Image (cartoon, rainbow, N blue to C red):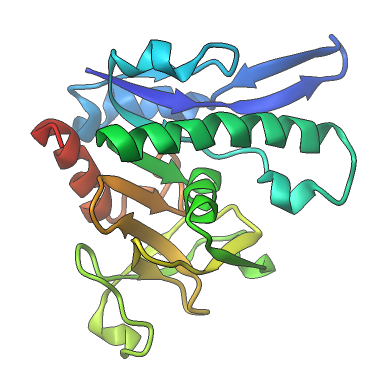
Length: 222
């Protein structure tokens, strides 16, 4: 079974070309993790209409890399152009996943993209560029007003400055950090999930409950 993965876009100054790239960590995850034993990753090219891929896919992952265009729009540079291109492509994938129930998982930047699509609010923080605690409610909705000690706690990796401050329906928070920013969420009706930590990197699978829900949705054909 194929899982499509969107890639980072980079501008190679030496060779004067734009490249699509994916960290080797993703290949290692699919090769070594039992959770992905039944799946083969399929990197998606931004030059190919997603509809040509869709018929072959059982799920889609939005990988990390590239800031969202809303975070780079004040500077007219190459990063903004690349972010716009990626945002547009991933927006179409989100629409497809909503319409056809294709399971979608956003990782870091990918989680930001999905949250932004549904109107989320963001803040910046330098405290999220290092491992930290995440308080996870797993499959049920997480109430920020509750004592965090009532939730399962895990140490997760973290490589982002832009944090999800608030999500709106139909997204449901599943995990938060100490500062109450949202670390994971899911769609209330569709198999769409977002995780701010990197599952493909060290400490990315300390908690696999949310990931397992997404993988189970694929296996169930939801």
